[in-house]
Structures are given as C-alpha cells and as structure tokens.
Length: 238
Ligand SMILES: [Zn+2]
Image 1 (spheres, rainbow, N blue to C red):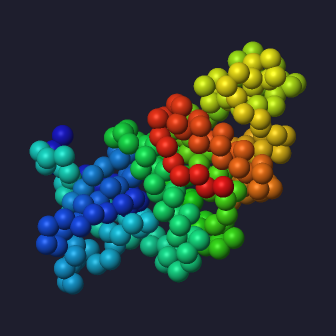
Image 2 (tube, helix red, strand yellow; image 1 turned 135 degrees about the vertical axis):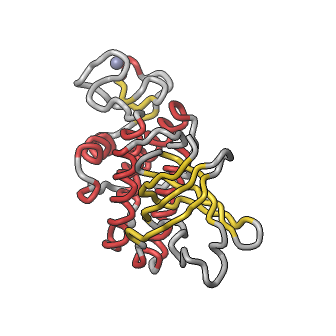
C-alpha cells in the first residue's frame, strides 16, 4: 500500500547509487526487511547527515511508492554506536550480526524478538569491549535461530526422545541425538551441549563462555542447523 509510514530500523548494509544516493538494506521493527533509497545522502549538505550508515539505529519516515524501494523522507538517530566503530573486534562482530540478520530474516514480516535481539547485540557491543568474543557471537546466532523459528532440539534426542544419553548433533534430525539415532551426526561433547542450552536460556548480556573445542562444536551445530533448515550459509565464528 503506497503512502508514508514511520518505523524504527537498523541499517544493515548500504550501497552507493547514482551520483549522490544510497540504497539501504534495513531491518525494521514494524515491517521486517525493507529496501530503501536515501536521495542525496552522499552530498556534503545532506539533511540526513551521517545517520544512514550501517549499524545505525534510526527512526525513519519512509515513503512507499510503486517501486520496490521505499524512499527515506526523514531520519533521526536512536543510537549511533560510536564506541564499537572504534574497536576492530567489536565492529567485526557487529557486522557479522547484521549479516546474519540480512541472510536469515529476509521477509517483510515483522519479527519483534529478532529486531530487539539485534538492537541489544549492537548496544552490548558498543558498551562493552568484552562482548566481542566468539562465545558471545555464537550466543547471538543461537538466539537469532530461535527468533527465526529454527532453534534446535537440545533437551532430548531429536529422533527418539531419549533424555539420558545424547552425545551427538544432527541438523537433519533437528538437534541433539542419542547413540542409537546418531546416523549423520557429529559428536557434541557435554560442554558444548551445556553451552548451547545455557546460551539459549540466558539473556544475551549473560552469555556463557566455553573452551575453544566446545565453541567449535557449538558453532558447527548452529551452522549446520542454519544450512539445513534455513538454507543459509554463514561464515563460522569459532
Ligand atoms: Zn535417539
């Protein structure tokens, strides 16, 4: 439906377009993924200033015409996250988070848990240099899987329901598996399993840590779940 609408959004990615414009890939609170054009934004005296850069959280007024792209008519900063841009690790983790949202959540359906999770992740990375860890990045990805409806089964064997003897992970089965159902699985140790359960159950600010071998297993479980169920391939974090 053509017309104007307001929404809060995170700028995920931008491309230069024409002489002075920029195409924006936005993740919005109200409408999920939205593509927009910001006209004249690359001019020195642009009324948008520097607000339409990646990782900005902004309040926008968008105009939807007949084309695929909305046009930005107003933009106001909610959070610029200046501190994370100063730290290479934090910046890299923030870019990974935006990339994961870009790849995993491509519909125009609003998804408030995913939107809030992304905002929280950018806020944490901005406020706390210690949040730019592999463990934290994995916790974010796992929670994003949950928000997108692809969380793996972790409480019991995904095939037979056995709660006692799970020791493997199978994306095609949908989560952890027992020795009797382990075809196509890889070994998932107790620490990796515990990491996944705890990361899913806690707020992002209290994401657990684990040793590198456990994190690699957790990373593989998350990556294979993404590939198998969402057909999305992300660069590994651990
Ligand atoms: Zn089983």
